[in-house]
Amino acid sequence: MRMLGRVTVGLWLWALAFSLLYALHGIGCAGGWHGWPLPGGSAFRWTMVVTWVCFALGGVVVLRWAIRLPKGLERRLATVSALVGLAGTIITGSPVIFTSACV
Image (cartoon, rainbow, N blue to C red; front, side, top):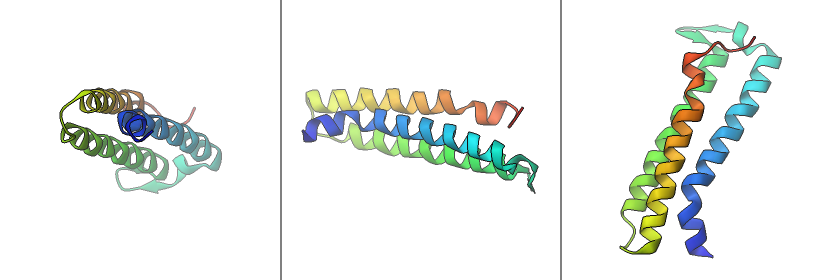
């Protein structure tokens, strides 16, 4: 059971990031966060970007941890899972930078 947890932690992190960003988007748009100005953007934009960056950095930490596991199948699976999770976090979260907040 421990091995299953170790080899899927990267994907779990991506799933959590995706779910949290999706929830924050709905809450922020409904709550009018995009109308609260802050230096460099709005409260909505800052919340989304900071959350996304924190999860991406978490993905890097998980990848570094996976690479340091003892050699073998578990290390290979954990490394691939961490890479996929990190790539997924970066790709699915990147719209918080490139798109408008709320329509």
